[in-house]
Image (spheres, one colour):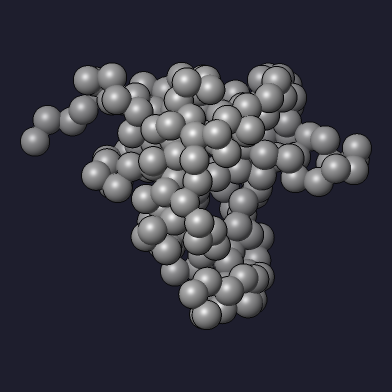
Length: 169
């Protein structure tokens, strides 16, 4: 099987529809988010601002197959350089390196945007996401027990973080 060439680029509001489709696969799969209600392009359009980078990964035919996005961590000014993030890959493209391309592009974009740390919380059972994040330099900080309930079941999450090279921003 020939590997498909993947490239990352900054996302635009025009990508919101396909990003919503990918996110909704993640919601349906119940492996990566506590969300249970499908999201619309209008909802995702609200993610776009001038400060928090969002990237999409495009395959060789030009289809968006994944994305990674940053979000505010907290509203106190001392946390202005920290962003939470999420990364989602179209179900049919998982295990093909899309997540790594998305995360490397997001790390670069967040660094240029002036962030000094990225963080996230990942379901402990989501071994693929944990392995991806370790492979791009994130470290496990610890487990938040019973962090959220999904479909009547408590889930633990692993907190992960990566410090960014502030000399590049």
